[in-house]
Amino acid sequence: MAQTKTKESTDIENQIIITVAGKDKVGIVAGVSNCLAKHNVNIEDIKQTIMQDNFVMMMLCDIGNLKITFKNFKDAMALLGKELGMEIWVQKKDIFDKMHTI
Image 1 (tube, rainbow, N blue to C red):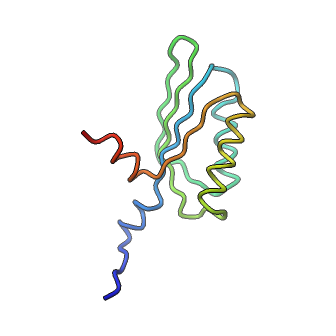
Image 2: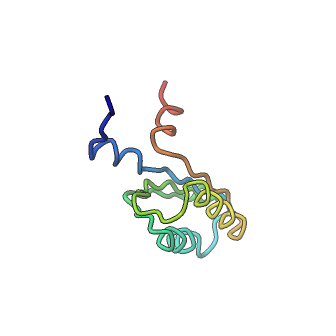
Image 3: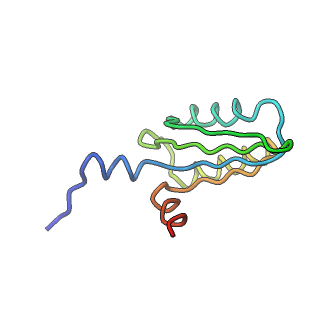
């Protein structure tokens, strides 16, 4: 019997966590946000802080309207990280949650 996906399970599958870290400078949030918009990724929640000149940001995003493969999107974000001089990690939210559950 085929398993049907509910809206809730589809929503969870489309959620990702993006983490950005590195030396603080002008344009980090703008650069990341522009890349997300270019790929039709919606920002659902965002937290950021600066600790002794180090910028750290976590974003909860929805990739339900992503027009490229998830791998290609991750590669685009990694390239953006290099361009910005930052580390950018992209993970599916369900994997992120499992990694951070004790």
